[in-house]
Image: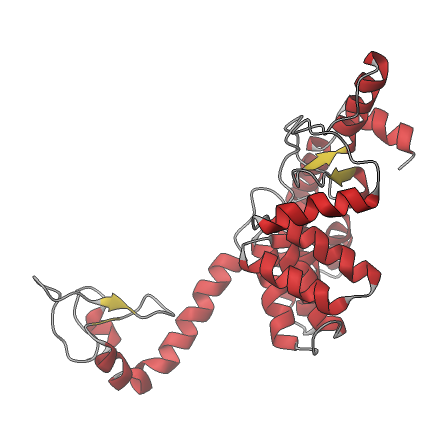
Length: 297
């Protein structure tokens, strides 16, 4: 039975039996084109469906991949509720609760504690701030024991910086399995560099895509560069526009160059510039500016 004939009614694509009473059909796991009454029917129909299935699966993947993220994977600061800046140096992750706090709120908390001569405590959970790196590590390990994906990713990054790539890979893999977007991006880097794991182009792109879908601007930008190098300019433009809309500066630079080469329309560039500026402005506040001046970021 052809897929065209099964698209509008609920019948098994292999044997043609209808979904009635106790007969329940299940969709193909990779696409939404056909349904089957049994594993046997699905296996029998595989050779007829395989080509269309791969095509539709790729279309569905692209629909997900090129959907504009509402925000970056960094989300909002849990204290001031403003979008987090893309610059990682302008925020801090707290080991006791694994929350990422913007420097504006962190600095404001420090000033308040100093003024009132209070004990230094976490800006979010109000636990005492540890005095040493060793104590921070112990707090982070406690969070890891309860499957805190942010703590796992943070530990993976720490191990990567120390040169223990094997441990870094293990922590980031577990964090990614739990849904941590930043961990997916770090895994893409490791598969690209061959650190902690053998180089694997397919897995590198997979983790880049998972990170980009989750709103990671660097991953999105890297995918744009990959498509640019492959000559897939239309796909590259889509990636750069999405990341530019999240506030990524490098993506805007690429779009401006594309405009000069006639690869991006004036309207599309103008829209991207407006969205980029809006995303950047949304991360600003007097409190953050004061912290930036204090820390000389």
